[in-house]
Length: 434
Ligand SMILES: C[S@@+](CC[C@H](N)C(=O)[O-])C[C@H]1O[C@@H](n2cnc3c(N)ncnc32)[C@H](O)[C@@H]1O
Image (tube, rainbow, N blue to C red):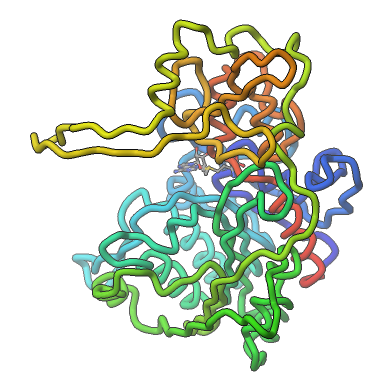
């Protein structure tokens, strides 16, 4: 295989694509300075925003990349026009953390069903249908919030257990790791869980099955460990936890981890044939840190005036960013004491930035928006869309189009991923599979 054909689901503005293919042949991890020599080719993508009529992320993606890009609810594509999803080697996407539980269908013959609108089951359906066609998708690269490993609160880790077990049922082995981009020299403290899957028809699956010491795959030999090394000192080996997920999805839904307070899944792990091994690893990185100061625009003449915080709103910003202890009333009328600590205000310039959230755009005061103190004039200002793109390691002005507002551009970045992570994973992955 000299070319890895990729389908990109939940594509947003194309973070996975830029990470895997590079941009104009150059690698995101090197700030688009060095050539990437990518073997990946996205042959079909899908992006549909359910909450708005305008499909701005789709327009950005379509205006930046060639090829087939679908703008329909993915569950509709699967139900009504599955043939438009081409056979492919690798499926990638960042999908939401939702309730993955299953129920028995009323019609017993139809088996189990997940809740409507839960996008995990769309991914699962595509994999299942391709297997039925004898064209299994060989590889997966997926991303989610790290909370997935622990949700829901009433049955810690249940949703992840269902996800892993349903992949094992389809013949996939999975390795996972929670990666904080800033731990590996990237400019944002954004912690996400990444999964890599190998179908049983691949040499890597067969290799994993034979592997006696699966711990070594997590700690040094696996695709994720190669891209993102962890401390592997023989004196201080972290504890290994093992488990088995070979019961039915219904049984996992109803009974998984009902009594324990914490999830059995640690930040790193591997699962094959329903058996998992999981370890809490720590990053091993001695390179240079990238700080907020490194990425911001220094020339204030390039910053539109609305980004500066005016005297009148400063009081509200201070209040929202500050610590609070107050009595609030819940929806059902109960009074309770609410407290929260203070945020660093303005944001520290000598550290990687905090996580960008989808509400980052717009001038109204907020607890979570970034505010920096300009190193030149000392004036306080918010971050521009270009700076937010840099925090996710996108090419400058990737989302800039005439009809796209700054608020939308900030929203895209709150939804996107740190492209440098996918770049590094992709390079390590292609070494393993080509
Ligand atoms: C977490 S974001 C992924 C962002 C992407 N990785 C990027 O780099 O921009 C999830 C995306 O899934 C899209 N989405 C949500 N529901 C969808 C559905 N039913 N069909 C297709 N796309 C959907 C959202 O609009 C959003 O852009």
